[in-house]
Image (tube, rainbow, N blue to C red; front, side):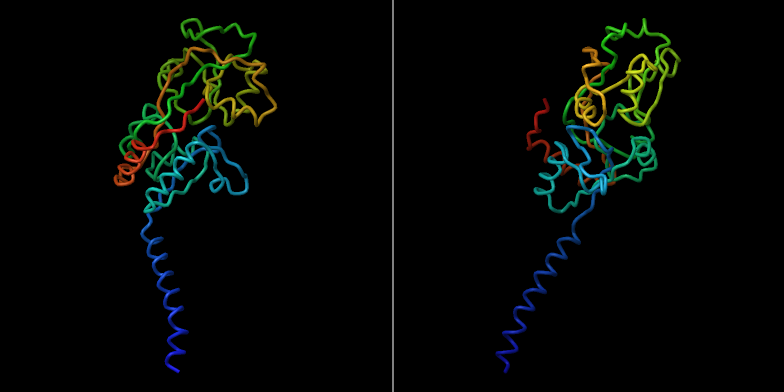
Length: 252
């Protein structure tokens, strides 16, 4: 009788022990929720509108998968939102981390609360114009009064002074599609675009690059960082250690 009871109970105890170990491991995991936009190809792109924050793919997402495999004490989650809302979250210190940007675009009130990971990929912003545009090169001295389309909520570093002094007019919009519409209809003189990400973004519109040209000279170049809340010092240290040892995927 006792042998029968023992044989019955032993597997149950084993199952309970395994379950408790799994639960303990899950309990020890620190959740890091990274806020990001919806599309920043090739680094991340939403693949389903149903649950965008749970359906992301891209070079940066792949990097974070590898990081989590090497550092299982962290559980990486994402929250997609418009860039202007991300800015408010950072100002209030509500986000754990933000992907991806350069510290040069962060205002002092955000830098007080957040720090930057080691630099990763280098990208550049350029002027986008129509192929028959009279604007042939980046020369702001000869562009006084020009209207430039920009994405709402984005900072433009060295160009901010031209907008603030009224030398250039800023026309903010919420989507790349709107930027392309404005340029194609000649409602603006040019737009600020990212040379690396635009080809991936334009695929989701009715436009093609054959009607536009990207001026070769960059407005500015910058390294991309993961912006991390200062209270997550251990996560920052581990992520930096990981990026030191892990070669980044080359972006063409």
